[in-house]
Image (cartoon, rainbow, N blue to C red):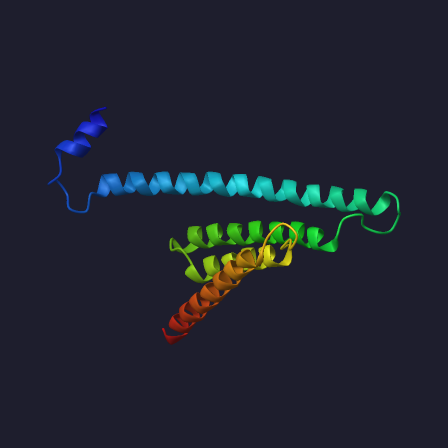
Length: 153
């Protein structure tokens, strides 16, 4: 409670607000580390779940073939790949203390590509596919612009 009083009663104290910014930075770091640990756990669980799913599907009747479509299996693989890319984004943030826009765009492109690969034409319509196409185009242009800007530096 005293902290809130200090925060609101001292608006003219320090223009940099060093104690407050240190606290915000520490909180941000703590949350990012917690999210990283949770994401690692989810990714490990997803890999084991995918392995169990593949082994079960492969060794049940008919033996040696998959009962589900390869598109669904590719979707599961891409889920893990996206989780790894998000983990890479967080790791890059820890190393450089800057959000790597290029990595975020690549992760987004992977997520949209996954959605296009597993696109179900029976449940969704052409408008949905057009939206995914527009998202792909926008992300591709964004990636090109960011890459071009980074190369010019």
